[in-house]
Image (cartoon, rainbow, N blue to C red; front, top):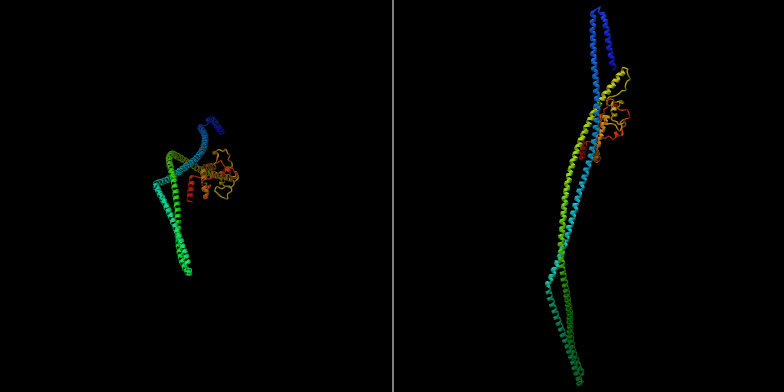
Length: 543
């Protein structure tokens, strides 16, 4: 504005001068007409040029005002776009967090449903095995009962056949017993008659022998007495003869007596044998009688037992038939209940299968969404890397240009020489531009409530990587056991030259604080994508 006023003053001064010169020219016009016409033409040209410059100035002023308005409008639009970008980033983070929570919830639901399905299958299998075991045990018990009942029935049938055989043979046994009794009676009678006859014969023979012996003794005594009386002279010879006769008679009597004794002994032996036979026959008869009585009693007992067994057999058969019908009805009911339970369980299994398939489809959908989110993050990281490379290149050019400008001014003596600075990576350099790029990655001067739009591209990259790592933390936890068992090395951290090159905007120079890492930067980790998981799984399979 002051320049504009100055320009207008100059124009008026020129006009005044031209007017003064015109007046002088008029005064001098009387002297020379050619000089006046030249001055008038010059004045006209000056007026035209002044109007031209004024028009140019007005046009420039209008364009400047329009440019300022456009600049203000662009700044406003830029602010609105920046706020929209920030809001979009916040919304994206919130959406990603929400999707992550939903994904975690779905994973938990899927794992819980899988666990419930496994538990249900295990329970159903266990119940089926228990029911099958109970049915088998009940069938085995019933078969054992049936076998026991069959054995009892066979024993009863055997006893019944024995009783029937005994009934058929009872008449024959009674006839044999009666025949044996008659034979025993006849044997006893004959033995008694023989004993009586033998005793009578023995006594008669004994009396006969005694009488004959007494008679001979008397005859000999009378004869000896008569001869002794008649022939006393011939006493010696007669005594000798008599002695011989007596000795012969005595030997005869002795032999007869010996024979009689032998006969007596044989008779006594026969008597003893007959007595023993008699006793044996009596004992046999008593035994037969006792056996007959015992058999009669046994027949009565067996008849009673047969009747009892027949009654118990009829009762057992009735009870067995009744119990078999009850067991059959109970088994039919249990089988019906089991079939109903199996039908219900099959339906539940089908429902579980359908629900599992639905959950799998949802999980696949979530996995696809997650893949899209990962692709979005990868694209965002790629865009951030491009911005980092572009900003670093621009920063390097600006810094190098500023450094050369400072050197030129120092050569001209306008300022001091700047410190020596290198623009290439070097380990021995103490003032390298890459040191500023490394400082741009630090979080020292960043507060907790900072907006993401105020961060550098390097810090934005770290935020994206941290968010991506948190999203993939569950997969990292799942694969931590296999990774630790295989002792796989961690994925390499990209160098500063390929992906994590810092970008420093003009006017956003990092502070010269100590290059120590903040706790937030220490927690940064390289994100793990699905490709890394596939690579690890292939390594595990090869191992």
